[in-house]
Image (tube, rainbow, N blue to C red; front, side, top):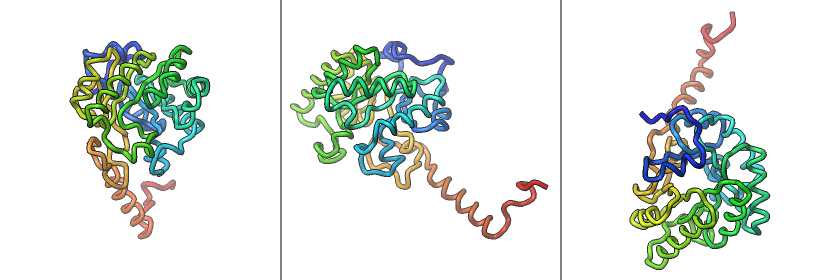
Length: 270
């Protein structure tokens, strides 16, 4: 059974699960999807990936704080059990820790989510520390950080060299020390993710980081095959192809409308 006990996930509960059982995290961007996933996920992430999978952009960089608030509020209304975390979008926390706190406070107050997520190590440590001190739980994110798309030269695996791996390990420890309650590790070698996971007291959640992380996350549109084409990244396992079901249903509907067989008396008021 993949269903959870009838209890609301909290940050302390999530933290207590390290070394106890694997954490399940999925993204969600609206009320309907949140309700469908709520009984199966420990954490629902309102990711700025909505810029790609919902808005159709190449990167997440254009997503605004207003848009994150809009989507996060919908997800929170649909989630009764899962812990809801919302991304701080690009530009909302990079300038100063003060900006970061204000953005985090706005997300919490306007949406009701329980925590925020932000990317990066060194440059983000002050923001993580200040937001945490304000009483807002922070989820970190290292490895492939989509908001660094241009500086990384695209979506590429990180931490492949010894020096890069060492830097990621040090950054992970620093993110924990700054107050993060958990850490996403994206697109890094599995053996490095294992080392980082064992070195931290907070849970790690992997995406393209092997099976030794404390939990896993996937973008829901990739997982259910809702995109027009199968997701390109190696870690995106497609569990079903909803796009094919939608296409088939739309084709049948269009055919029935055009030949006059819909609506028949069964679907009409007489």
